[in-house]
Length: 147
Length: 248
Image (cartoon, rainbow over all chains, first blue to last red):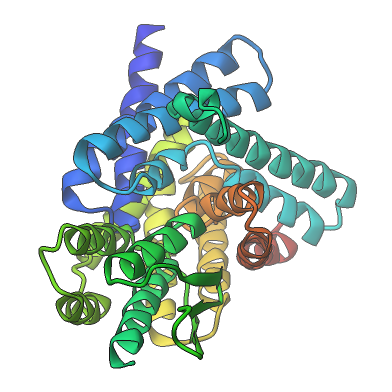
């Protein structure tokens, strides 16, 4: 069990940092990027282990990524997308999107539509996770009366 | 008047560099507005799409247009434009210096060396393959296939200006190589090797960002980016499906 968790953590760190290298993340942000990726992936993976489907874990994972990257962004004065683009890579439905197109090309239209809908829903769940993070990170704006 | 033009030029260049490097739309507009404000223009109107920018200042009687033709992800550039805009806000540099530095930044921002990018693509492929539930027997094959796929992608993108061709050829190479490895019993699961190897190429982040843009109210940007992502994932899917048609 602990071995599993350690493996997931190390590999999601490596994947995030390596993707950061492909997208030219500034050197000083690479390590923080990796840590953000680990946080998001571990939360997602942990929730999937509890048989909660895929939408909720994606939403919560994206929420965690957004919060952690906001923290790093404010500390280092670097735009927040520099942390959340590489950190999202393990979560985003790229593999599913590829499966959908492959199913279409091979003539399995029903299967393809199924995958496509899943891609849209996961992308939506991740986007909603980010929106929730905005709510939490700026609570003052909610309470402030509009004058 | 000359001052007005310099403000417009500088803002539009900053905006173009940020869109080309994959920044979010709200940050692009925010940065442009800040630069204009700090340069002395009280209000400014900006209309931004992923394919072009429009900007007007209230005192000038013309609108400036800036087309954006390429869109990749280069986060170092986003960071540097952001840092320059901060320096300008703190009055550490003048508008002319900002303009000059943006010009320089546009052309030479250091990129990680190619070999490191290819190694990184290999690492992305094999680690993601394992955490998506692959088997250890496929670890080295997927790293190899991912590295070759990224190299093909990189070289075609640098040499030819045909959009989506680089994704298609890279996917075709990935499919062919993965099939060959499995055929010679050097790999186990064709599907997992391919999914790992296409991960550095697939626009998962672009799809997610498109939805985020839409939810943030940038409907046009969301549609344009989503469409671009759809085309590039189609190019990848078709490239690999060709292999499935011929060989299995």
